[in-house]
Length: 47
Image 1 (cartoon, rainbow, N blue to C red):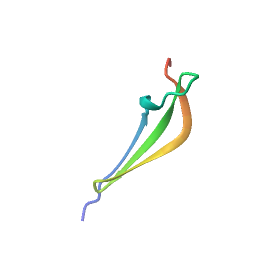
Image 2 (cartoon, one colour):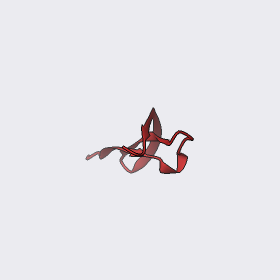
Image 3 (spheres, rainbow, N blue to C red):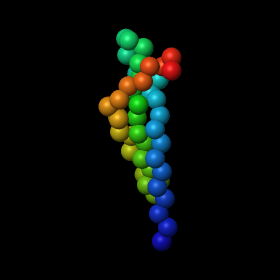
Image 4 (cartoon, rainbow, N blue to C red):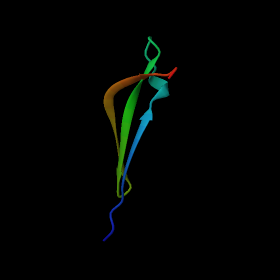
């Protein structure tokens, strides 16, 4: 029985804050089931 597991960090550009930063999210996929979790970190989009 094979299991699949994947982690992906991505920036939610549709939730930009007034100071120009956007939240970083974590997408976890296990056997095709997806969960998105906020990392509670923000990044300046200019970087």
